[in-house]
Image (cartoon, rainbow, N blue to C red; front, side, top):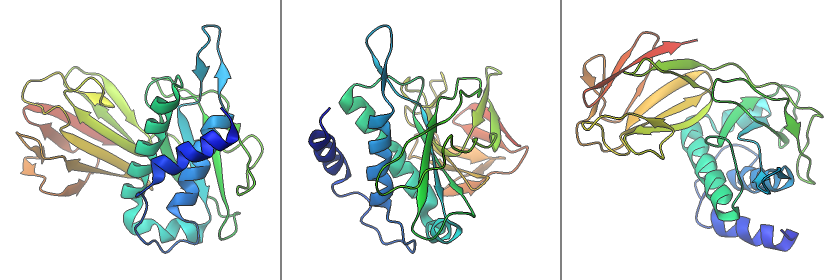
Amino acid sequence: MAKGTVERSIENIFTGLFARAFKSSVTPLQLGRQLLQVVNTQQETDSQGRRVIPNSYLIELSPHDREGFADLEGSLLQELTASLREYIGQEGFHVEGKARVALHTDADLRKGKFTITSKNVNQDGAATPPVAASAPTLTVVDGGPAFDGPPAVLTLPTGQRIELHEGHYIIGRHLENDIVLNDTNVSRRHAEFVCAAGEVVVRDMGSTNGTKVNGVVVNSEQLLQHGDVINFGSAQVTFEAS
């Protein structure tokens, strides 16, 4: 795709997004634009002619800039992830599983600088070597840092164990969700998990039968602790912190 076309596509996706004021010297719009530029530079054509891209993107910020996003980091991750997935679908890229975005702090970065590193993470959590991409507005460490291990693990009613890395996850009955619960008492888009800074929060998304943590209804959001039992309708999920 021509550079001008990419720029127009990025502008269209981010129109109206990230209007909220943050205390960081790096703006969400800068992060979003550069994230999609990195996606575009990382594409490779496989043997089937598909344009394949990595599924995991790590944004590292200076301590000052990460702190500036602290109060609304969950919302920022959600919007970055949604915009990333929209761009992937719009451009017809192939990605293994669901594309995700994570934020970390790099104490060596100066205020106003950030890095974006990409790599593939398999369904079992194993990863291929990271790929770093550079651009005029971005400082990138060659080879990139390794992603941290998952902050938590969910055990589903089927016994399947799902690793939660930093990012945003939708859980529900719909097959397009990040985590699928095949239960008629579960709404199509029932709830969401937001994993940031080593903590995991669960939020109900207006489900029909509600979300409970240890038997208590979640009205807005709930910070999860090791051993918590979460009910999505009648489907019971256990939470383990790493």
